[in-house]
Image (cartoon, rainbow over all chains, first blue to last red; front, side, top):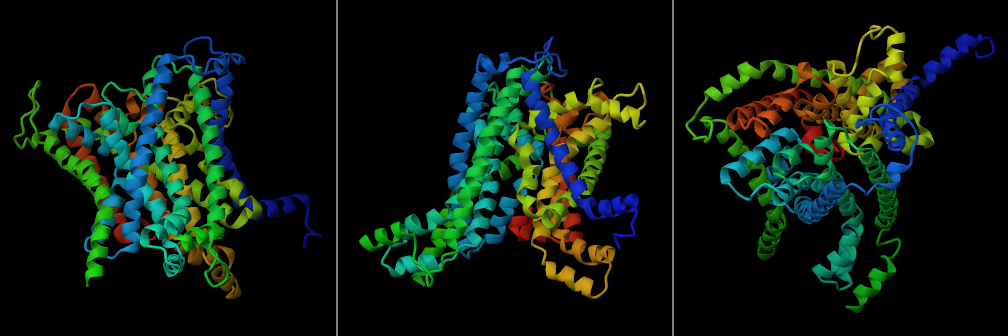
Length: 294
Length: 288
């Protein structure tokens, strides 16, 4: 059929064949354009305070990335906050996920519901209700503590969802095998369960960290005078955001991409490990020797 | 007997810290929000006396912003759906070995939300080539602007929430059993029939999850309106934010926040009733 087709007809048929793919690629380009803009404007040399139009190329702001004390302090606050919120929400969320996947108990549906609703609530409602709570109680004073409370609150649900999806596909015969080899329940958890669900936990932790370090709305309500990185940017918007913010955004972007690549590789390895059946091959040698030794 | 009891106690112990955190810092604050919305604002202090008038006052004062928020977020959700479905479909069925590369759609999540919104100020500013192209195509008048218009706010919303739409749609399409598509073909269904009778219904949970994950945060958003809009495109989030943090009109702000939550909840419940709850409560994989 192609032999008789004229060039325009061939073009149209090619276009029809690939239309979905072309739209898909265009949408991805659309998603990436702002990142390109942030990158290019980190080399901009704006004439005034506003970094909105291109003036000229300079590396000055990259050399001076950590040269703004206020910005450094905000960034440091954000990192501390995100690390603490990640740690707490990951531990608490993993425990919840374990309970939900492995146990049947009264109130399971209610617990599931409690985990879903924070994700279905607009941030502004969560932020304003927490502020109302702190205002009426009169304590704790708004600041780092209230930010931490808020961040852990909105991270828990996401950790639970990620870890739970990992636990659902878990082959429990691996644990039975460990028990048969004489491991007690704690040893089984430490040597078999934990290593296998670790990528899921790590994925949940990464999501929690990303949500926390990027949170603006809920933080804006509950920060008092404490300034996080997003709050600094919001505050600086009216008087002009310094170019260094673009540099830091790109550094964070690079770190996140690297971390994502790392988890993806870990996840693949864990999938391979999990696909080992007790009747086909043995457990990872290290686990076997440790269990046997006990 | 003894072991089941012990196991059950174990389950509650695992569940307790997270549950307590969510009850104390999510559910109870919602009660306080409702309570604060019934306090009377006497300037310096706010006594609780079932002051329902807060609701009628706040709603009559800010009904424009309320309606506007829902208009913007519904339009943004529909545009997201139109962009996300072809992309999800392309990643699931057409991308082949490029599938993983196409998941770059989540790349915006790796940059700070506020900065990527601010970058739209550059992209939509009057000097930007994008605006020149739109003027050339007569989509925008020769002396027209985009920045500080409703179009800018909606496009910001679309940009920021698009990944939330793409991922669930992709997840549901990726799980689709392709043998069903072959079966449809064998039964002489053409491409359009196959799509509307097989593909689309089977990806419905993804569409439901995606629209909810886009609609809910977009309605409460105020960053896009703050950075890309003007005073004529303020959303309800801007009002709540400013009443709480600048004007300290706590009861009115709490009333607005409570109404926002109630309306969203009602819409979500009706929507789930029609579309099925599977997407939100069942398969967790689709929700994220």
